[in-house]
Length: 340
Image 1 (cartoon, rainbow, N blue to C red):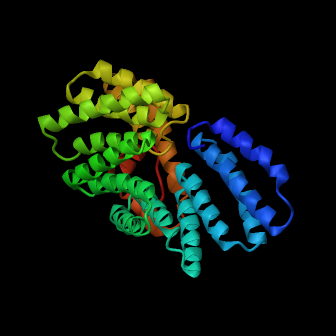
Image 2: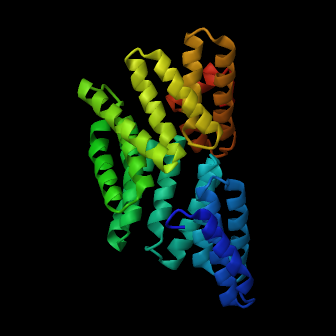
Image 3: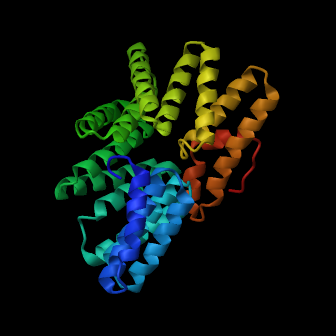
């Protein structure tokens, strides 16, 4: 799994399942194996299958009364829910996992759950709350010695700081996170940090130097993502480059990049923010007079956003999501009305 050979990882875990005994120790091992298979499924975007593995493991953990495993599996289910844009479910799982950690006094495992909750709040649009949870997570990761977890949370914090209107403060956070990830050989986190850096460089009132740096960074991410077969980083880099092309009045190149990005989204890339590429392509096609294609894309993006909104039951979360300017714009452009 660590080396990226997901098929071999899953086969190894499945081969081990028949050797798990029926006693508590054997059932504990079965939980861990099912969790490992769920991690593989999550990594390749098979979220329904991952959820099934985690749910089976969670039932076993509860049956044998292992609260630590229960908390870890609730966290894993929250991660899958978040990546499936089921944000209410994600928040509920993370809060339940944190409650168990508090009961156990388990500070070592709490940092990741705090970070996950912060990341989910960021996706919903509650940026101030997200920053608070992510900073708590960083403090805890540093205290207990989790360098990899610390750096992953730092990437998300940098993105949230930019969203909170301080892109210049976000840039050193993201640059440092990219450097640390590179030194650790963590290519996925490095590319995620660099593409968020490119996005931050476009936020606010970018200078000419900012635009140049954003293009260089996004092109580097795109090249590496293509070589490594990392579709989400490739998709995000294409969107950044398309926005830069539009600023340079290179509409044709921008459309080509956006079409490629949308193809990637439909193939499963960027499940969380790929909707922005669909919407941007729709707006550009509308401006180019391709009304039918534009209308279909804008409606598709609006329905994706509405599905996320409909899943939010908590009024506070729902309000936070609707307060986002791009969410309201996507719904309006797609002709999809919602109830407050």
